[in-house]
Length: 80
Length: 229
Image (tube, rainbow over all chains, first blue to last red; front, side, top):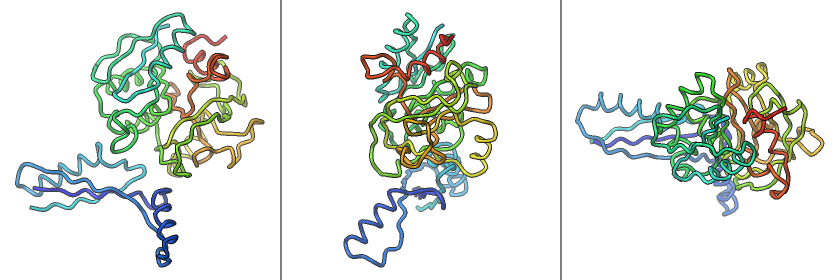
């Protein structure tokens, strides 16, 4: 089973990388870009086949290591 | 006085810290490897600067899960003074011994230069030999030193006088211009509620004797090492 964990900066937390991306896109003429935020995607290969158990475990992984909840939020997507 | 310096793969200020400690106390510190789950008896634990685990995932995040940090937590909770410098500060916030987080510098640039910081409280092991309002010139060298905390945490830090250092100009004025990384409230260092755990982005171990270009860092190290008059 695969899990995708999408980690994004929290609303209201300064995201200088996102700002730089939006600025660069504007500079390339993509004037419709009004904002950008940069996060990260972590792909996990998991043993086991119980999606409920997998989700619980990945939540624990997010809380313990993958996301810093002071500044980030996470979303989990399971497949397979 | 016995000091311990924690060493992670990617630490690069551990030896600077060890040299400073030896010069100031006459005794070599104990170097403790990240895999060790016990720290020998000591009066001060220093978590040095560097790029532990290559800054992978988030600065300090992987180091925060290492066996030695469980030992640091136990000792901190028992009252041993802990001083985290730069990456050491990042590790302390990642493992929850200090609140908040250190974000990418607002400028998106790595900043390596001398800055001025103002001592905001002397009620910590790292500042007990200084005076409130002292302005120290000490280098910073980091890409992720932009201190962030939510409003409630920030209010708590201010109300409990737990902001230890703020970036300021040479006259001690806390201004946006003097802020090298975008830190909220110009915060350069904080302590925990019990006041024995201190984290700071500037490097006192790089400014403790005249050969290094200045001695303003010495008061911090001397305080932490129990040498303050």
